[in-house]
Structure formats: C-alpha cells, structure tokens
Amino acid sequence: MKTLDEVKSQVENLANKIDVPAGMMPSFGNFAESVYSYVYIEGHKYHWVVSGNSPSKTDVDTTDSDELFYFIFQTLTEQMGLVYEILNRNPKWDYRRLAYNHQLELLQKLNSQWKTQREKEIEESLKWYPYKDNG
Image (cartoon, rainbow, N blue to C red):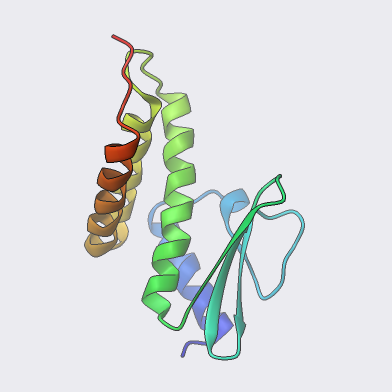
C-alpha cells in the first residue's frame, strides 16, 4: 500500500500532465474547508471524499491505488470538461457533448484504461439521459 505522501506525489505528477488548475486539486490527509475534495488513508483503505455546497458528499474507499487514482482523475477531468464546455459552448449541442469529449481526451493522456472505463460509464448514463441537442 502506498503512503499518503506517495499518493500525493503521484497525483501531482499526473495532474501536471494535464494542467489541472491548483484550485481543483484535492487536499491530502485531512479536510480543508477551502477544497472540494480530499484523500486520506484509514486502516488499509484509501478514501476519496468529494463534498460540495450541499449536505451530500461522496466517500469512496478502496484498497487499490489505481482505482483511487481513477476516482480522483475522473472527478478532476469532469470538472475540467465542464469548464472547457463553458469556454467553448455551442448552443446547438447538449453541453455534455463537449464536456465529455474533453474529459475523455484528458483521461487518454493519463491512462487509456481510464478513458475506456469512463466511456462505458458515459454510455450507460446516456441510455437513461440521452443528449438533448438544440437544433
């Protein structure tokens, strides 16, 4: 099992490959109110916690460091995809088209298996909530 410092170092190295903005980066070890997400280790499990402005939060735990990194970068690239979509909006398209495409491009730069995994998740979501283009 990797130490928290090793996890932090690997996350930072991967984040540098896709230019994750500093304000999106998680904290490590304990929750800081100024961050959206954080990673900690308890027992023999890694925990990935994402909290927003609502009372809901996501707490995923795993013993697999690669799975932890997927959770982290799935979230970070999703945020980056949404920012990209806002900056490059096409009013004729469902906003998710650009956001998902950008997210998948970012994941491909990090790990092609992560891209494939996310593609499957998106396809499943689109079965229930298909794109609604405006034109």
